[in-house]
Image (cartoon, rainbow, N blue to C red):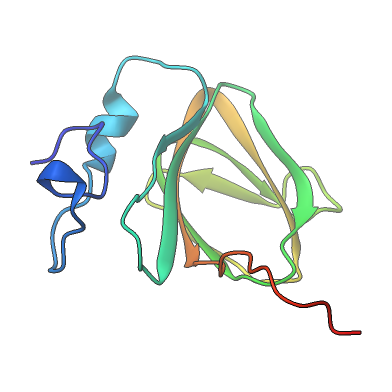
Length: 136
């Protein structure tokens, strides 16, 4: 099994072409408490999906916001909290195993419960910025 700190590359930094285990989300969630934030994200170039394993500290919050372009899937790995719709603080309870779809254009917020919240997000990868001629 890969270590909790494994990144999405092969030895010598080469991308891996075939199917494989990227990380152990259970090990990440069970690791000693670390500052809140992103615990894991893929580093392989050329991928079509982006993902993050995120930890919110007890009572931590992702404030209400709207993602205009991307649908996002959220899988709660550990802990509990609430999902808001931008208008209400708590709309749906979140617990380990909950799979949530956050449609693009829909406001949302996430608040961790008293034990914190660890979750995986998956969404299409945004294309990189390109420099080109101004379309005058």
